[in-house]
Image (cartoon, rainbow, N blue to C red; front, side, top):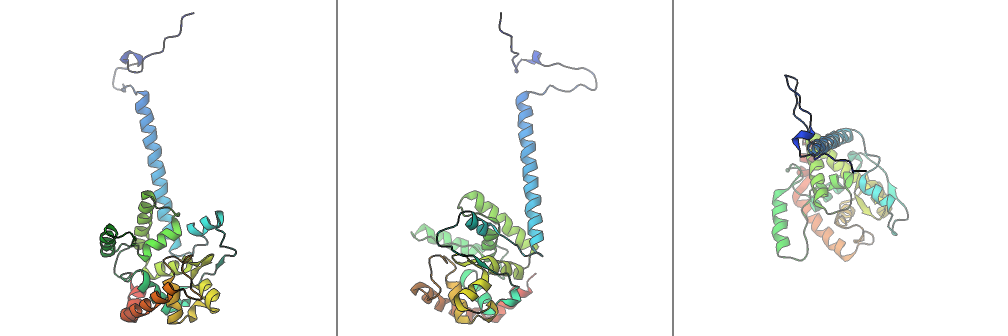
Amino acid sequence: MAAPIIPDPDDPSHYQWESGPDAVAPVRPSASLGRRVLRWAGKIALAGLICSVGSVALLRFIDPPMWSWRIERALFPPAKITQVRHQWVDLESISKELQLAVIAAEDQRFADHNGFDMDAINAALKHNQHSERVRGASTLSQQTAKNLFMWSDRSFLRKGLEAWFTLLMELGWDKARILEVYLNIVEFGPGIYGAEAAARTYFGKPASRLTRYESSLLAAALPNPWRYRVKPPSPYVQKRSVWIRRQMGQLGQITLNRVHQAD
């Protein structure tokens, strides 16, 4: 028996042509597949856009019950975490000393930029070209977006998504809300999330009663709270806390006032 003849898809005679006003051009299978792929990609992109905008808008008014880095720690718990401590408190219940200490340590232009500190980014790029020790330039807004929505990866995809969520938060939240969320989800030690848990764990008091010295110690550990010890403070934390307190004195209460008044 002769093998069946398979039509050549590139042969025009393979398609049926219609004449008249309702006639349509033939559709090649490859072109149809390409359009389907593009259509699905567009749907996925639209769904991602809606979900990201919606989640950021919702979290403007609702405190996040969970966030990406805590979920990742729960799914893949490091050996150091034996207990998770966290308690959400309003920004008014967090010492202004800690608020200012974190700004002094992590992002002194927090009240001025729109999520990205271009001066700090350019300075970090120049520094990293001539030094083996990498310097970061993430703002508090970027760190909040990373802790809230991102995973622990250094890919360009993650950095792009982090920038997108940072932009959304800067457009939809005020600076006080960004600072409030940051101070409630940032990790101050293994399994210690947020200012309230850190204050009670390290100093046996609520976050509202933290002193300038205690606040500077907590802020000093933020670059790597798994490495730098708060209590008793490691030599690095002790030295950096002195610098932070000096910066706090220079920034002053006016910096916090601008953060709380910024829209």
